[in-house]
Length: 147
Figure 1 (cartoon, helix red, strand yellow):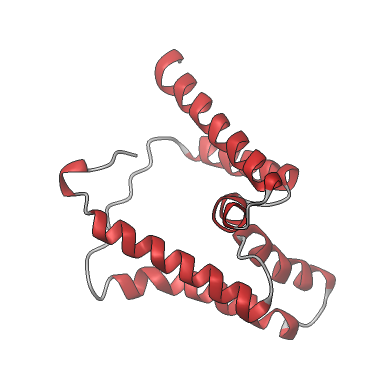
Figure 2 (tube, rainbow, N blue to C red):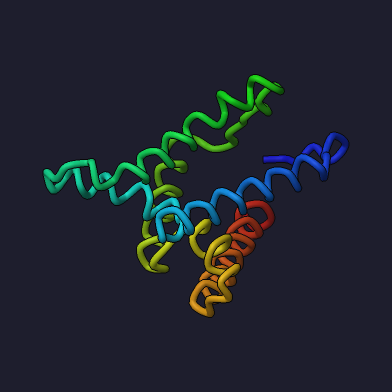
């Protein structure tokens, strides 16, 4: 993934950050839960696997729906940026599995720890953010410079 620095607009990045902050604050105030995507997505899946009703997962399902509808809403105002993938499907599967293991080990995902946990001054979230950002930096260095 490469950033097009010539067309970077800090105002759109600021607006996106404000919208993410607003969404997580409203989710916390409205549902009393942290807006970590791993937890939001896994709870309805656990309910389905357990044979439970999804009525209790209404708010989480609406949140997931909003995530899925957001690109379509964006397209009303501007074209979506092009998506390019530099690796094959095998590497994507391995990367996804490693992320899943990390989410379970860290008891939360990047959005839960990085956005919500740090804003609550959670020491556990700070340790997790340092760990996953450090692992990301080391992984990119190894893949781009050593291999």
